[in-house]
Length: 254
Image (cartoon, rainbow, N blue to C red; front, side, top):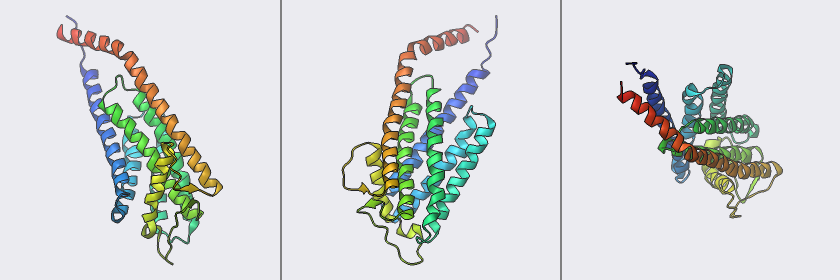
């Protein structure tokens, strides 16, 4: 009787467990960022959360990618640049307004690239399961908090970008010391992401308006892509179930 090689099955199970752990960690780190903004005294925790998110996406989860090696190397480098740019921005005096430019550029590219990779990763899941839903939720939150970070940098680059918010600057103080106002900016980023539009905060300058519009477009696009993946997996579920039963029957006949 022909023996069935179970090594691929075991490898798939290990890969599935690793993917599940990565999605849970990504959701945990995004929740750390969002919860930190609710408590001004814990504002430092939000930026630790940003660091962990970038590290997880670009240094850990990249190992499971099917992308070319050169693409993974660029992605890893982008993650390091984004983390360094954020902390340089946080620790420089508010008067150095252009310190936020590298942050805005690097994190904008990072979130776009990360979401594309995450959607492809979710699309590779054979069925709708807990891991897929957790990953999809984490990706949506990731767009919102990154948009908030970029908007915060924009407010220091062009003060008065968002009204009625004001970044109170004490001469010689760094951005981290005046970061409480960023809680309101992150709230506004999720208002844009969900296209709610309460109207209590308004983008005033042209660049702030363009970033707000981009965030408002990204939210529905992401939901449409994820819904397409979910519907496709539900439609294909009987096929995958039949294949799984066939593999189980072969294994029992061993």
